[in-house]
Amino acid sequence: MQYNYKSIFESLQDGVYFVDLDRRITYWNKAAERITGYSEAEVVGARCMDNVLIHIDERGTTLCKGLCPLMAAMEDGNARQAEVYLHHKRGHRVPVSVRATPLRDKAGKIIGGVELFSDISSKKALQDKIRELEKLALIDSLTGLSNRKHIEGELIARFHEKVRYGLDFGVLFMDIDHFKEINDKFGHACGDAVLKTISETFKASTRSYDLVGRWGGEEFIGIIRNVDYQLLGKVGERFRMLVEKTRIENSHHPISVTISVGATLAVPEDTPESVIARADEYLYKSKRNGRNRLTICEFGKTGN
Image (cartoon, rainbow, N blue to C red; front, side, top):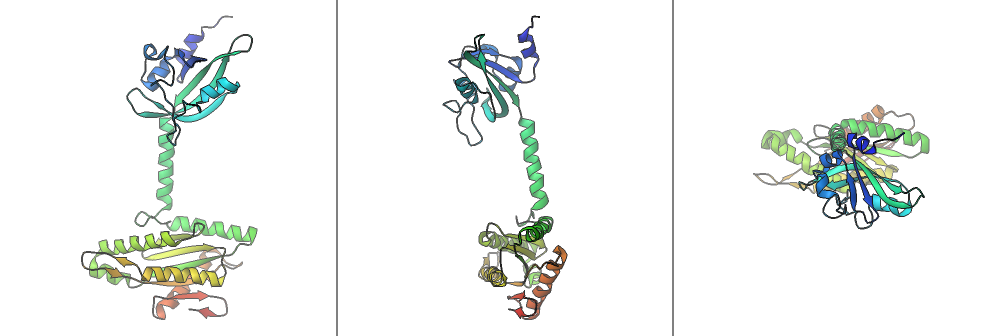
């Protein structure tokens, strides 16, 4: 039975092109024309690396000089798959999924290669949109810190980690002192600037495996991993001191703010709700005792 393979290739939604051993293009289907903007007449006889496709990877590395999937397939006889960016005739880059396969004669000798490629622009756009939505769902839009939803998820994860591996963690509940007075005196725009500046301080001074997020309003939660009471207190005290030394510029004059902190380690009988409630309780002890201080729960004694 004889097949008209060219008519099959022309009906595909994927771009298809054939090359010889010198990587000169010998066939170019209609989908290849549509995806790249180059007509068959413009590319047949040219080498694929000569101002036609010029594949690059996501880092911008040009692949035609040695990392080309099609060339690699022709050299070792093994098929390749990759996601790369090809050069469109109009100058922009198009993300494509490529599948490169060697072409062999009847004796099995490699005589060239064939590449199928499909436009994955919509896939990339969807993935970017999903990542953006995930980010929006977990990040506080004003401060760029984790939001309450993310904090709650991290707390659950830390409890699972504690049960499974016995890894201790602590919680810091932090609140900006006299924040309402700042809003009333200088306006909400200044209050937002205070929140953003303090958040930058937290970001710059948080260990990579810890998390500080905005719980709501002027309240922040720190989830501090692999600590005992002494280290948890040091971390909380460092945050308190750094905020105290932070200056927020505004149109009137620089503003200095402080935070009060409540700290506690999670214990086996805790839940996410109970450990937050206990840290909140000790935060208000800091407030009652004069603000701009840390109070830590050590079950049986209270330390400032």
